[in-house]
Length: 124
Image (cartoon, rainbow, N blue to C red; front, side, top):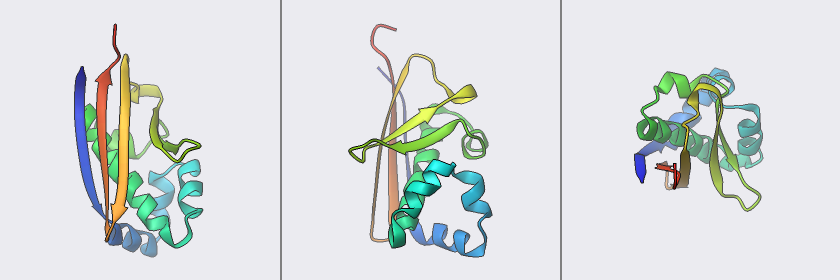
């Protein structure tokens, strides 16, 4: 059973401009492994950062968790599996018991999009 759905669209240039001003945005919103992943993309790093930002917003909408709780703590991580598929890893107060989280991200022509679905695990 689906217990939450969220989506978010992020303008990539908005992320680029924030990064151009200072590293505060990057260093306070993203975990070290997320930064490493994005920076490995070279010129495409802003698309990856924007997609990760959109995933955080989409998760907030799907879960009902506050943006502040998701953005500024280490309990939310967007990771990429060996095949490149994104997934969300939660810990601490962000864990949603008996839930499975699905995330899809994409970017094209100046925008990044994320879609999150939270489903109650079967039998629970």
